[in-house]
Length: 108
Image 1 (cartoon, rainbow, N blue to C red):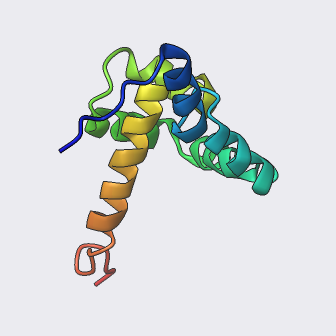
Image 2: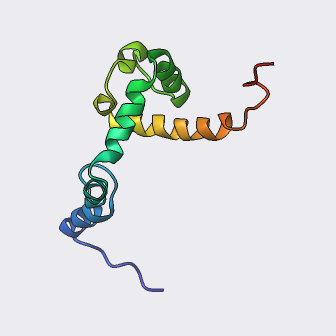
C-alpha cells in the first residue's frame, strides 16, 4: 500500500477552501450564488420568528453556555458559528423526535 503524498501547506489551504464548509469556502460561496443568498436568510427569519423563551430552550438543549437571555436576543448571524451548528443539530433532532408526537398534541 502506497502512503498518501504529503501536500504543501499552500495546497492544503486551497484544498480546504475548495472543499471545506464555512469560513469563506468556495462550496458555501457557490451555494450562496446558486440560491441567490436565500439559504442563510431563511435561517435568520426562522430564528427571528421564534420567541425568546423557545430560543433559550433550544440553546439549553443544545448545550450552549453563557447568558442564554442575552444570547437569545441576538440575531442569528451574531451567534458564533459553533453555537449555530449546535443549535441546528439540536433543531434537526427535535424535529425528528417531536414529529412523532400525536397523543400529547391532541386536544381531547
